[in-house]
Image (tube, rainbow, N blue to C red; front, side):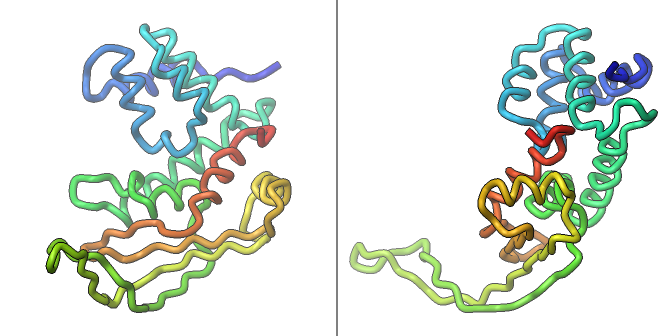
Length: 207
């Protein structure tokens, strides 16, 4: 029989989701727009949008974590613990002004995959469109951009993610490439498809 989280723990989860006030539906949306967004699947997002009362919010958060508990027969939920620790690390490392670090591109990667075991940095010339035009024509200029690559080998990935990668016809490894935008900001330019698979890999059955 699936183990359910204690009601007190669920109530705390609701209180956390309701921190900004508002209706249960607003609280549910606020929770879904936080770091949990990286793990939510499309059908779960649809369910969240339909919630209208406290009990429904509690039940949805409960089901969300139960689906990601690797062994419901054992007390505690390692997936939730890992998520909480990674969110805290991402918030500390990648904060962007008022934006939480766990909601940035690198924060998303850290939450889903954990810290990269290998980091590579390089610079290269990149052509970018300029905000002005000459004789009605777009103008480009060459800039030197810095890039940060996160590399995960087979031994660095959860078995569930390795299985999903192999099922997708890919090697059991992940490479993400971020472009440095300055002021501690970065954008993901390669590897987004890996993050989609990583989110699915958190499910207990991987599907």
